[in-house]
Image (cartoon, rainbow, N blue to C red; front, side, top):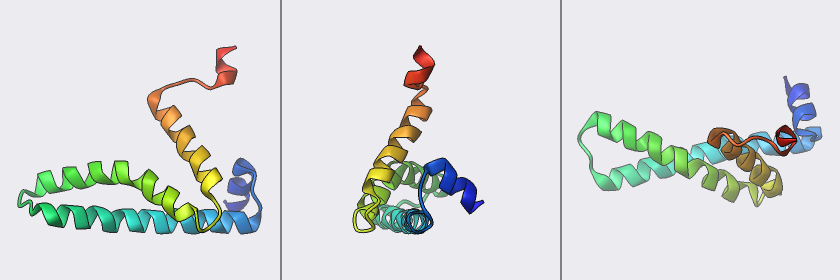
Length: 99
């Protein structure tokens, strides 16, 4: 599994480790920040609380991962990664598909 990721992303073993640690820390930080924001809102409705949490996480995750990638030296990788994810979600085709 790790070899496939290294080949797909074109990285070495140490950089893969840094990327995986950044994913883990970014996701954890995002969850903690999302919970803190919701605790300030004091919502009692469970469904509304869950819906807002999912929405918050969706928008906070890229920011958290980018911020955490800076000290690990992986900012360029995550900037490109998030850009590819946004491009896929928006339905835009790759430059090679347009030819």
